[in-house]
Image 1: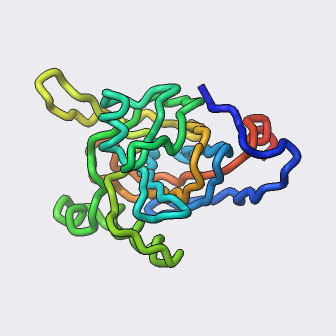
Image 2: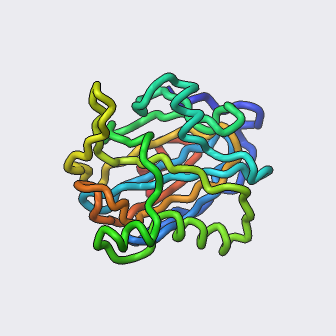
Image 3: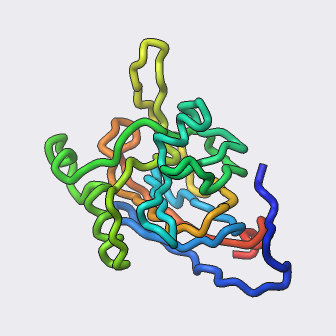
Length: 215
């Protein structure tokens, strides 16, 4: 369920970030204000979106996959689930989700780790760090990402089993953001079997769901 907008007038004009196209193997970012909707769309088969978020008012406050797991008591990301920051405060709420397969366990890839496994290109960590540097945002720590669209399974024995990614072009998630946030999204190679073919992504912002249909 998406949270209702509140605390501003319906006719108030607020900045709305332009959509951002992210090429396979690269990283992009977008600013989203409280109450706005964030949509992340797969533009290619097998896409994975490694998602990071930082408070616009305090970069020491970030979207935390660890706190989200504890807060929700779940390893699975489901509709209506609140994604929280490292202060255990909500950042956004998951609404529409056409994939319903996401990873809340695995860290972002590094260039060195990918090279050891025979992959080329920048790792997620280096690419996201470069994007933050480009924006002039200094963060005290780069947390682990939320790996949207990544297909993995957790067994009862505790094994994490990668599965073949079945994400198709046009698949997406939509979240209601509840705190002013800079979101950084990486389309870099994950190095995770079955989820290791980078594909382009699109990130966009709207005040209501119908506005996405007008894009």
